[in-house]
Image (cartoon, rainbow, N blue to C red):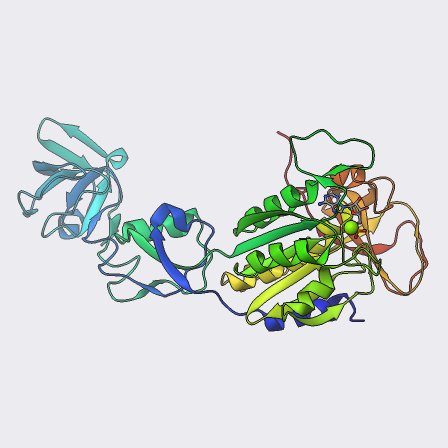
Length: 404
Ligand code: AMP
Ligand code: MG
């Protein structure tokens, strides 16, 4: 039985990259760039003004104040009509190309204009307030590196370089299969003994949140044939997640059918709680995650094992959400022999994370998952963790954000 870190390493070692595709620029948001982007032109494309003001010759302004004759006007987007001659200045707007000869721009705030004479009042430094051609990105240089996760900043850069289609890793198509005779689909009304297939939706949401695409396979009934039929479909996707039916009960068929379908099982059971019965296997290069059915276990194991794998498939280099240190506000107890992940509310106070239990911790209590901001990891052999102990926290909510 692997421990939690080993289990995750086994999974990640087996994950290979998906293929690549080109998508319209805006669709590339959140995706991972699969090739370096080389600038096809200089940024900026020409020397231009960084201020609204006057294009001048530095040599005219060695002693200020000095009066210059205003001989032209260049708005942003405007064309250059003349060069700056000695003793003259040209009115120029931010972003407008600087005219030939211009060696400095004087901000309008440092001038006074009367008719066609402008008085330059402040000291003028050579090259001031000019954005020079290529100073941001030179043509032919690497503007964005392969492996970068595309954010609005990269979108701006790529747009500035005229890139309409962006090479990115494909989105993983992730099959989601729920198992159990007790399940009904959302929209139907459960009778006692039935439960709504909420895991499928929660997993689909988590898959989508990780940037992948869920493919809902529905419900496999508790028999081999039903599992087989659905799993054959699921194994056509880039990855498959099953929920429930992975324990040792005589109605748990997930592992048997996966074996029958040539899925190479790499582990079954991890020394964690919740999520102990998790299994993982590979069919060719497709990972198959068999998660336990309790909604809390399903969500926690997705967080710990599935998301990093999906991110890796889609080209992400940073796949594992790191733990932060926090202080447990009240004592916790557990059995030795398993790493426990308890659901906690987390507050940030004076720069420190303070964690307190989000409520009852039985795996059947979904409510506590809703009120939790994250998970606190309680070490394998610990049995009593006193209040005030430092613990590792996995943040699952924006606890760093503030209200107003
Ligand atoms: P099992 O591993 O099949 O014994 O399932 C464990 C428990 O998980 C069941 O008793 C159900 O309450 C719950 N469960 C299983 N599948 C789902 C599902 N798709 N959605 C919500 N809860 C589920
Ligand atoms: Mg079941």
